[in-house]
Image (cartoon, rainbow, N blue to C red; front, side, top):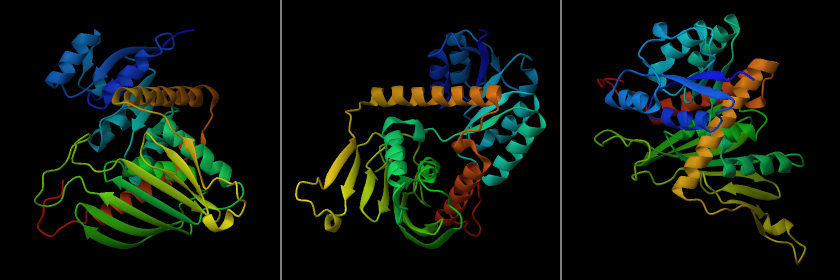
Length: 326
């Protein structure tokens, strides 16, 4: 079987895509890096023995897949990759206008465009989603709670959207800013929701980068049902089911159950993230080969998550008069 030729775009988070491609050498071949030409990207291309490209127009014609991890500044690059007939796996987050444009561009050029929410593919989140969907067969959620950072918000919303039937109608009812957190009261699909979000930076403070120890939380998610609450206490777990005390009348019935619990080191988490990205690449390939659309790549799912992310970010980072908006 011919190996698929893969281009990695971006060398910061792109390093995890590069590691994912190298995990499956029989299926994929890393054929180049697309970046601006920083010292880091020059050194990486030399280390890997692959070309460094600075423009889409200079790419060779035989690239099959691009893993795009360039942030919102790379949206134009993503569109040009699609126009060149390349299937694109695009790292989150992006707003709904870009998502719609990218989807239309992909359809016009007969290629696939997938959005990688990433964190839903980690072990704890996968267990959380699976168990929540099992419980949902018997009762609908009655509340949603999330604690995250503004940088990790999109991933949290992607996970929550996978365990609800819809976010629509979505309403964002109130905002209470108490640095470093902003509390947002909302409604998603008619279900009350509360989001407590840590700002990466506020006026007068240095902006925190990914992985900065100044972040207090990564994720804490909870979905409430009439007969109990499912909790994910971080991106590495544990995942715990708490029975409703007043419905647990059987004497020997456990009041809580650990759904997922596994000691995880920083290296274990890195390996999980590489594995999740490889799964996302394989999913893109399946969609391209079999015209299969997984639920999390359905346009409705993508647009609802993107729209909610965009509106919440605008709510917690409102523009200030006279300030230059980046």
